[in-house]
Each structure stands twice: as C-alpha cells, then as structure tokens.
Length: 107
Image: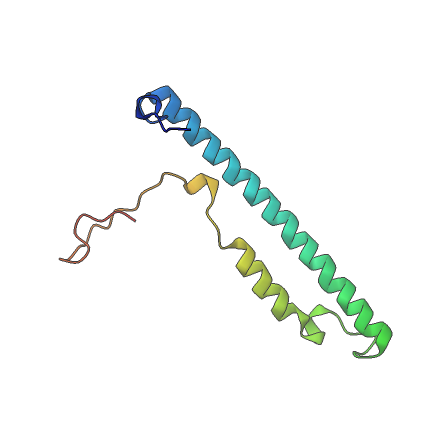
C-alpha cells in the first residue's frame, strides 16, 4: 500500500480537529485505565499483606504502613502516573527568560 500525500489528515482543518480529538480521547482512556491500575495495585498489596500475616512473616496487627509495603506502593503509583495527560495535549510552555541555548524553544 502506498502512502498518498494528497490525502493527508493534516491538509484539511476539519480532519486535523478529528485527529486531535481522537488523540485526546485515547489519552483520556489511558488515564482512566491508570486509575484502575492503581486500584488494582492497592488490592495486590493488601492481598500480599494478608498472605504475609497468614505465614507469620509480619505481626497480625501490621498494616501497609507499619509493614513497609507502602513504600513500594508509592513507587508504583508514581511510575503509573508518569504519562501524558489529555488536558495538557497541545499546551505549549514558552519561557520568558531565554539565553543562547533556549532561545525560541517551546516546551
């Protein structure tokens, strides 16, 4: 299949809006799935703590904080939340102070 430059989605403004809207929808769906991943991780850590209590590896009154499992959970939350967000799509940051290395750059 050959790529036809004449039918590029960036030629028409309406087509561009549709593509940008689709990307935002996919990013929003990704963010919702990340929230489900965090909830799933919490349930996994709670199950692991119950297993450790049943095996006698931790005291029966320990929880996620006192057993030290919360640190791994925080790390997993941080790693899950490092991703692009749909509400920041297309937002450019322009630095008002620039030097010879950053002149004209958008972040």
